[in-house]
Length: 194
Image (cartoon, rainbow, N blue to C red):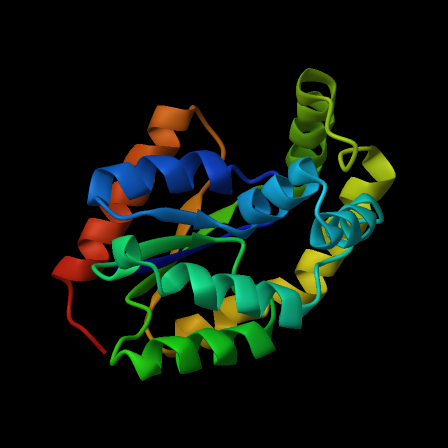
Protein backbone atom coordinates (compact mmCIF):
# COMPACT_ATOMS: atom_id res chain seq x y z
CA UNK A 1 0.00 0.00 0.00
CA UNK A 2 1.26 3.45 -0.97
CA UNK A 3 -0.82 5.80 1.15
CA UNK A 4 -0.80 9.57 1.61
CA UNK A 5 -2.50 11.16 4.62
CA UNK A 6 -3.70 14.76 4.33
CA UNK A 7 -5.28 17.14 6.78
CA UNK A 8 -4.69 20.55 8.26
CA UNK A 9 -2.11 21.10 11.01
CA UNK A 10 -3.43 19.60 14.23
CA UNK A 11 -5.83 17.14 12.57
CA UNK A 12 -4.01 14.16 14.12
CA UNK A 13 -2.13 13.04 11.01
CA UNK A 14 1.01 12.02 12.91
CA UNK A 15 -0.85 9.92 15.46
CA UNK A 16 -3.02 8.27 12.83
CA UNK A 17 -0.12 7.77 10.40
CA UNK A 18 1.80 5.75 13.01
CA UNK A 19 -1.27 3.61 13.75
CA UNK A 20 -2.12 3.03 10.08
CA UNK A 21 1.49 2.21 9.21
CA UNK A 22 1.55 -0.42 11.94
CA UNK A 23 -1.85 -1.80 10.91
CA UNK A 24 -0.85 -2.14 7.24
CA UNK A 25 2.79 -3.10 7.86
CA UNK A 26 4.40 -0.19 6.01
CA UNK A 27 6.80 2.53 7.22
CA UNK A 28 5.34 5.91 8.20
CA UNK A 29 7.41 8.61 6.51
CA UNK A 30 6.86 12.01 8.09
CA UNK A 31 8.49 15.08 6.63
CA UNK A 32 7.88 16.78 9.98
CA UNK A 33 9.95 14.11 11.76
CA UNK A 34 12.73 14.49 9.17
CA UNK A 35 12.69 18.26 9.67
CA UNK A 36 12.66 17.99 13.48
CA UNK A 37 15.57 15.53 13.51
CA UNK A 38 17.63 18.00 11.46
CA UNK A 39 16.68 20.81 13.85
CA UNK A 40 17.61 18.69 16.89
CA UNK A 41 20.92 17.70 15.29
CA UNK A 42 21.75 21.36 14.67
CA UNK A 43 22.37 20.88 10.94
CA UNK A 44 22.47 23.79 8.52
CA UNK A 45 19.29 22.45 6.96
CA UNK A 46 17.76 22.24 10.43
CA UNK A 47 18.49 25.91 11.10
CA UNK A 48 16.83 26.90 7.80
CA UNK A 49 13.83 24.70 8.55
CA UNK A 50 13.47 26.06 12.11
CA UNK A 51 13.27 29.64 10.84
CA UNK A 52 10.63 28.74 8.25
CA UNK A 53 8.54 26.64 10.67
CA UNK A 54 8.66 29.28 13.43
CA UNK A 55 7.26 31.80 10.94
CA UNK A 56 4.41 29.41 10.04
CA UNK A 57 5.64 28.73 6.50
CA UNK A 58 6.32 25.57 4.51
CA UNK A 59 9.79 24.28 3.77
CA UNK A 60 10.63 24.88 0.07
CA UNK A 61 9.84 22.06 -2.35
CA UNK A 62 13.44 21.54 -3.46
CA UNK A 63 14.54 20.69 0.10
CA UNK A 64 11.52 18.51 0.84
CA UNK A 65 11.54 16.71 -2.53
CA UNK A 66 15.17 15.67 -2.13
CA UNK A 67 14.58 14.29 1.37
CA UNK A 68 11.46 12.37 0.31
CA UNK A 69 13.12 10.91 -2.79
CA UNK A 70 16.03 9.65 -0.67
CA UNK A 71 13.70 8.20 1.96
CA UNK A 72 11.44 6.40 -0.55
CA UNK A 73 14.52 4.79 -2.11
CA UNK A 74 15.32 2.98 1.15
CA UNK A 75 14.63 -0.78 1.20
CA UNK A 76 11.87 -0.69 3.85
CA UNK A 77 9.68 1.44 1.54
CA UNK A 78 9.85 -0.98 -1.41
CA UNK A 79 6.65 -2.79 -0.40
CA UNK A 80 4.72 0.38 0.40
CA UNK A 81 4.69 3.38 2.70
CA UNK A 82 2.54 5.99 4.35
CA UNK A 83 3.46 9.62 3.64
CA UNK A 84 2.58 12.22 6.28
CA UNK A 85 3.30 15.84 5.34
CA UNK A 86 4.04 15.19 1.67
CA UNK A 87 2.82 16.18 -0.84
CA UNK A 88 1.73 19.64 0.31
CA UNK A 89 1.60 21.43 -3.05
CA UNK A 90 0.56 20.57 -6.61
CA UNK A 91 4.24 20.67 -7.61
CA UNK A 92 4.96 18.05 -4.92
CA UNK A 93 2.13 15.86 -6.26
CA UNK A 94 3.83 15.97 -9.65
CA UNK A 95 7.21 15.21 -8.04
CA UNK A 96 5.79 12.23 -6.13
CA UNK A 97 4.18 10.94 -9.34
CA UNK A 98 7.57 11.23 -11.08
CA UNK A 99 9.47 9.51 -8.26
CA UNK A 100 7.04 6.60 -8.10
CA UNK A 101 6.76 6.24 -11.90
CA UNK A 102 10.52 5.59 -12.02
CA UNK A 103 9.83 2.42 -10.01
CA UNK A 104 6.64 1.51 -11.86
CA UNK A 105 4.50 2.58 -8.90
CA UNK A 106 1.78 5.09 -8.08
CA UNK A 107 -0.12 6.33 -5.03
CA UNK A 108 -2.86 3.82 -4.12
CA UNK A 109 -5.04 5.94 -1.81
CA UNK A 110 -5.15 9.34 -0.11
CA UNK A 111 -6.85 9.69 3.27
CA UNK A 112 -7.96 13.16 4.34
CA UNK A 113 -8.69 13.90 8.00
CA UNK A 114 -11.30 16.66 8.29
CA UNK A 115 -11.59 18.78 11.46
CA UNK A 116 -13.33 22.09 12.23
CA UNK A 117 -10.75 24.97 12.13
CA UNK A 118 -11.60 26.26 15.63
CA UNK A 119 -11.17 22.75 17.06
CA UNK A 120 -7.75 22.62 15.38
CA UNK A 121 -6.63 25.87 17.00
CA UNK A 122 -7.71 24.61 20.43
CA UNK A 123 -5.86 21.30 19.90
CA UNK A 124 -2.66 23.00 18.82
CA UNK A 125 -2.68 25.51 21.66
CA UNK A 126 -3.06 22.59 24.11
CA UNK A 127 -0.19 20.75 22.36
CA UNK A 128 2.00 23.84 22.60
CA UNK A 129 1.55 23.88 26.37
CA UNK A 130 2.17 20.15 26.86
CA UNK A 131 4.98 19.66 24.30
CA UNK A 132 6.64 23.08 24.45
CA UNK A 133 6.54 23.49 20.67
CA UNK A 134 7.67 26.94 19.55
CA UNK A 135 5.67 26.67 16.31
CA UNK A 136 2.31 26.38 18.10
CA UNK A 137 1.12 29.84 19.17
CA UNK A 138 -2.27 31.06 17.96
CA UNK A 139 -0.99 33.54 15.34
CA UNK A 140 1.34 30.96 13.80
CA UNK A 141 -1.39 28.31 13.96
CA UNK A 142 -3.82 30.56 12.05
CA UNK A 143 -1.11 31.36 9.47
CA UNK A 144 -0.37 27.65 9.00
CA UNK A 145 -4.08 26.95 8.50
CA UNK A 146 -4.28 29.67 5.85
CA UNK A 147 -1.23 28.27 4.05
CA UNK A 148 -2.79 24.79 4.23
CA UNK A 149 -6.06 26.05 2.74
CA UNK A 150 -4.25 27.84 -0.08
CA UNK A 151 -1.60 25.24 -0.96
CA UNK A 152 -2.59 21.80 0.29
CA UNK A 153 -6.39 21.64 0.49
CA UNK A 154 -6.62 21.85 -3.35
CA UNK A 155 -4.78 18.51 -3.56
CA UNK A 156 -7.99 16.81 -2.46
CA UNK A 157 -9.47 17.81 -5.83
CA UNK A 158 -6.47 16.33 -7.66
CA UNK A 159 -6.64 13.02 -5.84
CA UNK A 160 -10.45 13.02 -5.84
CA UNK A 161 -10.46 13.30 -9.64
CA UNK A 162 -8.22 10.20 -9.74
CA UNK A 163 -10.65 8.24 -7.56
CA UNK A 164 -8.07 7.95 -4.78
CA UNK A 165 -9.51 10.21 -2.06
CA UNK A 166 -11.08 8.90 1.15
CA UNK A 167 -12.41 11.56 3.59
CA UNK A 168 -12.67 10.74 7.29
CA UNK A 169 -13.91 12.89 10.20
CA UNK A 170 -10.92 13.52 12.50
CA UNK A 171 -12.87 14.49 15.64
CA UNK A 172 -13.28 11.92 18.40
CA UNK A 173 -11.11 9.56 20.39
CA UNK A 174 -7.88 8.33 18.81
CA UNK A 175 -9.16 4.74 18.60
CA UNK A 176 -12.44 5.91 17.09
CA UNK A 177 -10.68 7.91 14.35
CA UNK A 178 -8.32 5.00 13.63
CA UNK A 179 -11.28 2.64 13.27
CA UNK A 180 -12.98 5.07 10.88
CA UNK A 181 -9.80 5.35 8.79
CA UNK A 182 -9.20 1.59 8.58
CA UNK A 183 -12.85 0.99 7.67
CA UNK A 184 -12.77 3.66 4.94
CA UNK A 185 -9.44 2.47 3.52
CA UNK A 186 -10.49 -1.18 3.51
CA UNK A 187 -13.75 -0.21 1.77
CA UNK A 188 -11.76 1.77 -0.82
CA UNK A 189 -9.65 -1.29 -1.67
CA UNK A 190 -12.68 -3.58 -1.72
CA UNK A 191 -14.57 -1.31 -4.14
CA UNK A 192 -14.20 -0.87 -7.89
CA UNK A 193 -10.87 0.59 -8.97
CA UNK A 194 -10.61 3.61 -11.31
